[in-house]
Length: 277
Image 1 (tube, helix red, strand yellow):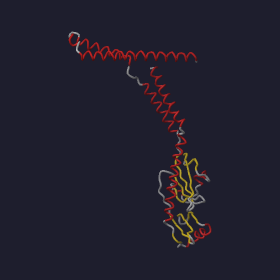
Image 2: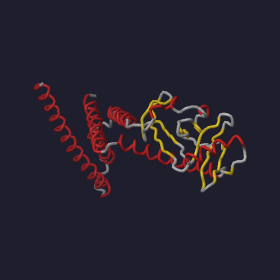
Image 3: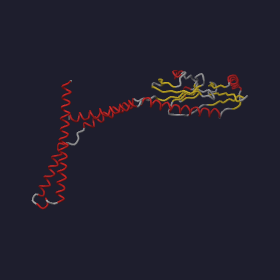
Image 4: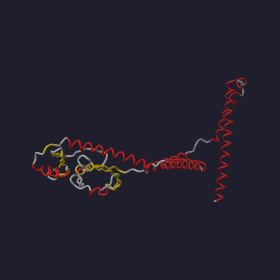
């Protein structure tokens, strides 16, 4: 039992050291974070394109009196984007040559798998994965994101990685986020595999000390079976079989002696270390 325990510990320790060496040579945490940032970059591009498509398809000349004020703002500033609380929709006004076109649109983007907020320049939410936030200020949710392009923040009780981008054509501010994952999962996996290897090593293997006994018994059975028939003992096939068994016996004996010698050396080494401590 002690021998199996030592073997299991050595096997688990060897795997653990090898895995930690790989982790040391490659920064898994940084690599994983880069992958998450690349995913968020793709999300930003997707939202940007979808938002522009919805707005471009809704731009038209002003035909309603309640939208005149937006055209005046667009004439002075070159454009306008915001949330109209009465219409409960997003209003976008842009100056095209000498004219001003206005779009009144309900930004239903329908993206899933990540958190997103589309805001006007002041931070009012125009579209979001959290529908209840539309018309409210984003600072109530992700205030830590102000003036940052990328940030780790606490969101809904969990650690999230957020990125933002400003839409150059209409002035939207887009925020996207996903749950932050680090290399802790890989560490748990290493410990789990090391424990499994340790437990597997404790399972008793085949008893090699009985190999010689089995071979001798097999040889004896063959001889006993044919001892009254001298002619059959001289049979070439039987002789070959006996020769193969004898060779196996010699190899097993040599392996047993080498194993015993190694175990004795290991025992002496452990005793010396114990005496030295």
